[in-house]
Amino acid sequence: MRKTQLLWLYSLAVWLAVSCEITKTHMLNERMMKSAVYLSPELAMKPGSVFDKYYYNIDFPTGHIGIKSFNAEVVDEAGVPVSLQDTYLHHWVVIRYYQRIGSEHKNLRSVSELSQQTDFIWVKNNGLCQKIGQYFGLGSETRKTATHVPDPYAIEVGNPNEIPHGYEEKWLVNIHAIDTRGVVDRLGCTECRCSLYNVTINEFGEPISPDYVGGLWCCYDQTQCKVKEGFAHSLRRLYLRYTVKWFDWNESLLPVQIYIFDVTDTWKKSNGHHHCKIEYEISPCDSSAMAANECSDTKKISFDMPRGGYVIYGVAHQHSGGTGAALYRKDGRVICSSIPSYGQGSEAGNEAGYIVGMSTCYPDPGSMKIRDGETLVLESNYSASQKHTGVMGLFYILVAEQVPSQNTILVL
Image 1 (cartoon, rainbow, N blue to C red):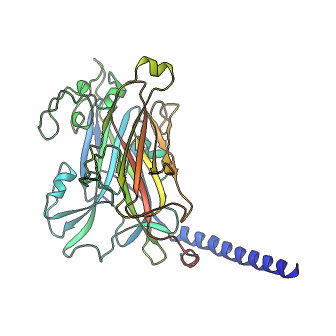
Image 2: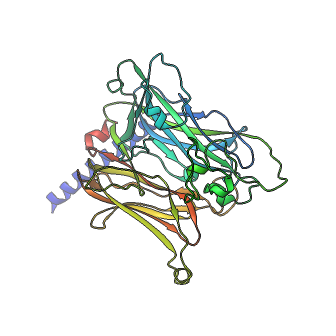
Image 3: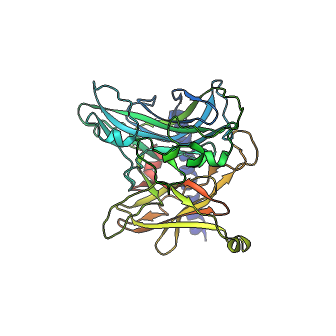
């Protein structure tokens, strides 16, 4: 009995010592972490107007760093958060790229144009969709969605060994906002219903198919959603305020890879090609389904994960009407699920009818591993009580190749 007690006391002492060291390490981390708040260029908005521009070489931390979080929101000239009921934040995305030193800045309209420039190299995430290459990005849910990368992990950028000779690392932001003050149909404007925008061609001058009733093709930059007759067209100057937290890179940090999946991906094992449509449409259910309280739309796809690892974070992106999304294994075991929360009021961060946050998952270290080549399933669910256009079903995960050892934790 005495030997057992001594072993128990020894184990307790070791656990307390490690716990104290981890606590001290955490305090040290907080002191070492850096943080900066930036403002985007101005968003000039009037009732019904659409802002959808790309800004290059935005303010961003420099050097070889490990990013711990990236948060953003729309604010006015006084720095006051703006309600989604006035200005709907359709999405914001931040993209990493390399620019040839000494080359001229080019104000391009899209990331596809960026890919065609010899002086610019688009550095994409590890996801399977070529069109969805951003490092960071959310939409209306941005204020109440956690983006923190748990210790000892971080998103590594600025590594001089990875930047091609003669280039430098840069960042750009695309902000898509819709001013809904005084519009005749607020939901219709935010869902980019073509009839409300009175457009027949997309931003590239191509004709829009009559079958396309709503989505990104109809609410591009400088288009105008229908406003109530006589409503005052007051100009408003807004900004995307974004906060970045990071560490200077050191050997105790473990890098993670960003993967973004799209439920509209048409991938088939037979051809291996990933074609992501990004958005899709929800048709309203019939009266019998509504009466039986089964009025929902479920869309799912399967795909093979090219390279596995340990999942340390996950979150979905959906639009109004979304009821949640999940990433799971072929046998049905859930890897990560994400559920939207809807606002109940009118103040910024609690706007009724809008998704104001998405739940996130942080699996215990080492508990959720994806195998190389494993088949995964992505499912996106929406309410079908009414028609929805231009909705999305994206899923972001962060994947690490290794889990932290005790030594890794202690030397942070």
